[in-house]
Image (tube, rainbow, N blue to C red; front, side, top):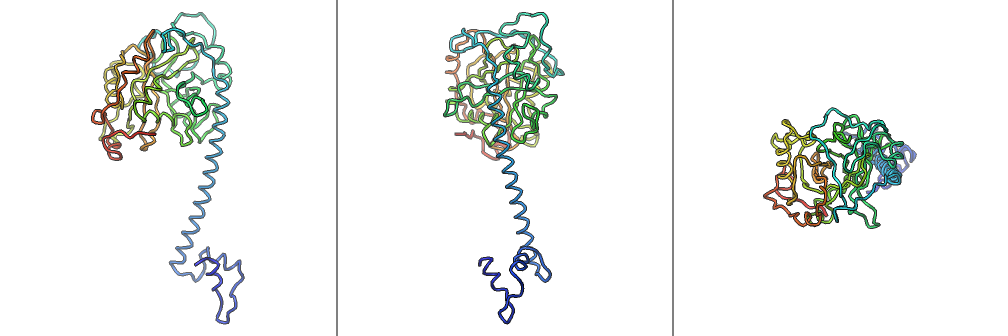
Length: 373
């Protein structure tokens, strides 16, 4: 029965209406003296649902407006993308040079860009001064450390999907909710590198973790989930470019591992591998242990050689398949004159039985890979 029909029936014994329409309308929705218990409950539930609906509409509006502003800011920053000289050696690798760096490094360093100027020291593929093409971005935010892109991964318009500046904050929380202009952002923050890593030539961290939100709108690191699509997607998009403010030529990294990691003990029977802590390989963070954990969790395998004195980047984002877990991609910097095509051909799909899945994933999906298409 409709509300109007119910209201039409509110008459006295002589057929006259007891109250005007407005009063009856209000009393239909708001608890009133004389209402029975069930009627009071109905009205309270209805009122609560109206409040929740209004809040949801407001939140949705804020979310959509936030996404629009985020997209505008992303487009603005992409116009400031530094121009880095492409390497002409190494065939299809596009990465002719290498960076010499010592293992070790100081975990306590925040990675602050040192003042420009001073004497130059020669490093292969690396300047010791910030390149001029970075200045427009640094004027926006002095915390900019580099630019990350997957140049072969494009949308239907031919635009690179993952193509972002990388900043570094005082901790690993600051840029979770701040955009590149340091304004509060509920739509993804910005891409940032681990606060305790450094890109300074000569003391560069062995393994730099770069974080990004997995946003429903598809921005930031959301599209990294495409690497759950099977080995063919990996073969088509094997290289990540991560240029720093010191890069003289493009610095390209070939993907080694793609896998799931839990961050809480109760997600995997008390087991947690704290991959973010493996910045510089040492006695407390042994390279072989790191390599073993990354390899066993990876959905794919390859014959790509991995050595302790290589340079690595780790991309970390939330897994969209299950809450509070991380989808992690590890890549190694290309060595001089490597044949990328030959390396890519060694990528293989791992059998589900050979992949280590955290227990929470198994509860949700079983002991198997779940592909994203």
